[in-house]
Length: 409
Image (cartoon, rainbow, N blue to C red; front, side, top):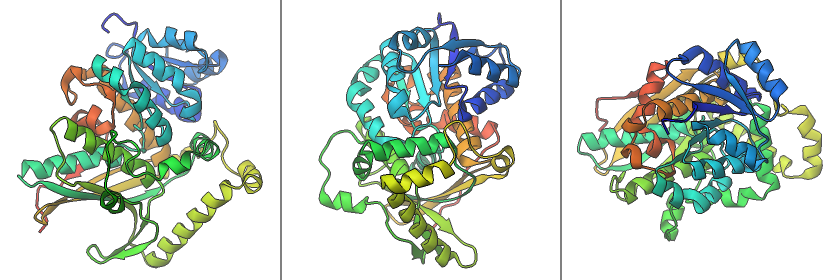
């Protein structure tokens, strides 16, 4: 791909998150190092973003449904980064072109039923060609997937086969309209039923009933006596756990196994006073909200009150937001290690932008150093497609990714 005009094209660059990717590239990427452009369906809006950010980059125009125009963009770049969701509505032409032109791809989707369709349609061909198609490179699902990868490999360095990893999240921030639009599209497309499959994204194989029960999503808050904290189901767990399990299954197929009967689960974590009440209240509130938005009449009343596509939290809220992901990996003999991923900034926007931009730059600048070398391809995950390279880039970008050297007994 050395003859391509661009290293990275940012598609959807006039959207709420898309504008932030333009600012990130402007602030962190040297024009001599990376040749990049911005793209979307509206030239006027794209030029306004370019002028607002104050960068001199090319503007490329293609509607997401115009396959010929999308092809013309994809053929010119080594990497596509897209933030244009819902991805089940606006991502298909991009993926199809990326596979045909052997252009690497990253996005910020959490739409796992759509990712399943990509696996079925494109994984085999992308694997043959060495094309890395990596969805879910935002807060969905980099902390979960990359954190688990680092924990498991640390245990293996110590000669300890991993049995399970559990992640405990805390976060503060807000939602943008694009995230909510993707969620509503899942409801409208009947995608929720598919999301309930704990092995939705795994290579096709028969899981036993015991395996399915062992990996079932938590439904209720509980007190964890081992950690002395209250935990509750994490609303992104139905996305993140599927990505982590796909990573584990792919690594097993490549003889780089996480461990026999490996399991992963994640939770929200509550430590403050009245933690139990907060865990119960949040779980009940989320269940009520999910039930309400599935009722057309109720949703029609709620939707005008929620952030609309193209809008999101204020700059102050995004700057004051934060997230923390604590991971505990347990070996087959009961010993374990602990790790942390955390950063300042709203997780759905600031952290997501850092995750996806550094993912794209990993592909553009360090392809030979990525897991599996230059030949690995397919519908991959952050761990299987980017691995330690992404972890190092995120650390250099100011994010905390720590794995304790000491072993927990």
